[in-house]
Amino acid sequence: MFAEDEAAILRRAAAGDDLERLIVRREAGEFLEHLVGAVEIAGEVLDVGPGVFVPRQRTVLLIEAAIAEARTRVRPVVVEAYCGVAPVAALVGRRVSGVQLHVTDCDERALAYARTNLPSAAAVHHGVGLGALPQELAGSVDLLVAVPPYVPSAAVDLLPREAREHEEAAALVSGADGLDEVRVLVRGAPSWLAPGGVLLLEMHRRQAPSALAVAQATSAWAERGFVVGEDGETAIVRLVRAGCDGARAAGAAPSPDAEEP
Ligand SMILES: C[S@@+](CC[C@H](N)C(=O)[O-])C[C@H]1O[C@@H](n2cnc3c(N)ncnc32)[C@H](O)[C@@H]1O
Image 1 (cartoon, rainbow, N blue to C red):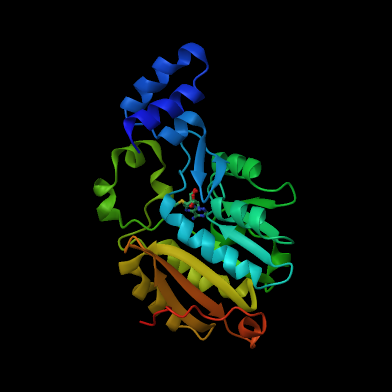
Image 2 (cartoon, protein in one colour):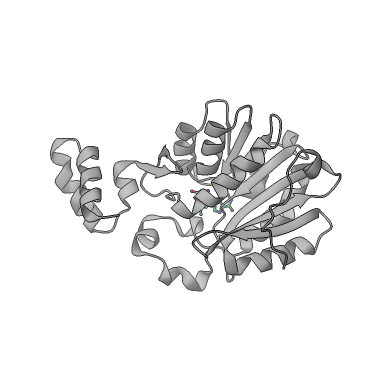
């Protein structure tokens, strides 16, 4: 974004003499989105604030995939795990009618913003991993989506300063290969998904083959693949829960550009 555009956004966000203070904080490295309390993504404006993970533009790829997947089903149960301010669930809720939304995160501050971004009927669950979900959802989720933390621990120093200093490490980093939480999701999701239910996970393109190898180690997944976004870096891993012909019966055909390891 050009400096003049940022200045215009800060001017609009500032109430009178707060402008100077906002400029100083921005120059000191705070996210523009934290300062103005909003992020624009996929044509929608969502609430966000200090200390909370700011949804990235690369996640539009996952948002579009989730919307397309949800549209193939009737009154689908959709879960965004590791939701932060819930960009995927919020956009699915705004673009697909009849969805039943659930979101989870271990950070109460993020969930406070998620509540303002989601339709009022959405259920917000606080807790670690998928264990935050209510037991009655087991075996009934049609679509489970997540942007878990996936930065390898050794790569933290390569992150932009604003992320290192103004987002929680727990929101970004996930073990030596960045895949600790991805493994939790790939192994844990089958018991929450209905037969034919779909798991969509964002990660880096180079991590996707390892995620598919984790999926291949169990018979829970009937289909495994991934697509890479136009940035050449962001990947969406798509796994379909085995159990019946549900995925195809529901019209959720694998995308033509899905890759196998
Ligand atoms: C990379 S952020 C993504 C947030 C959101 N999906 C987005 O794209 O803006 C990861 C989120 O996972 C949450 N998180 C990290 N580890 C978690 C865990 N073990 N259980 C639940 N949530 C976790 C963090 O609080 C953070 O909000």
